[in-house]
Image (tube, rainbow, N blue to C red; front, side, top):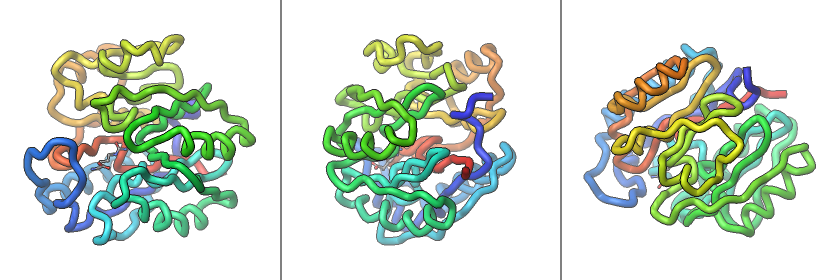
Length: 261
Ligand code: CIR
C-alpha cells in the first residue's frame, strides 16, 4: 500500500461549542453544535475502524474552527511542522498543536513566516503539492520548503482556483498515484502524470475525501461519485458531514494522519 495513505495514528480535536461561529465563505446558516459533535464521533469511530490509534484533543472554545486540525500542522514520517494559518482567527491553533506534536515526534519545526494552512497541502507518494490560496502564500511555502526539502521531500507549488477555499477543498488522494478531483481543479493540469478520477458534476463538495489504510472516508450524500469510486475498486466509509460543510469543512480537515517514525 502507498505510504501516503497508510497511517497508524491520527489526531483530532473535539469540536468547540463555538463552532457555530466558524468561518464560512457563504452563510447558509450556522452548524448545530450537537449534531456536529455526533458527526465528529462517527468520524473518529471510522478512523479507529480503519486501524488508526486516535489522539482526541480537548475542545478549544477560543478557536471556533479548531476542530479542523489539518490546517494547524503537517505530519510527515520524518517530523511534524506547525503551520501558520492565513486566517487571523486561526493563527493560534498552530501553537496550540505544538505540545501534542512534541509528544509524538522527536523532530518538530514551525513555519515562521508567511502563511500556510494544511488544507492547501496534498502529500502523494512522490511529492508534496501546495496550492497558493487566500490562506497560503509564497513566503509561507518558501518557509515550508526550507523545512521539508532537507527531509527528502520535493515541493511543487500550484495555484488554487480563486473561488476555492483550500487546494484540498477540490481534491483528495485515493492511493499513492490516484487523485479524486473536481473538473475545475483537474482542468488546471496540476495532476498530469497522476491517475485522475473526476467528481461527478454537481457533487463537487465530495472531492475532499481522505484515504486511511483500506478505506476512503467520504461524505454521505454524493451517490453518483460514490458509485464511481466503488466501481473503481475503492471501499468507502460514508460519513455525515452536513454540519461541518456549513463552515466549509470536509473529511480531510478533521484529522491529521501519520505514522510516527
Ligand atoms: C475555515 O474557513 O478555515 C474553516 N471554516 C474550514 C476549514 C476547512 N479546512 C480544510 O479544508 N482543511
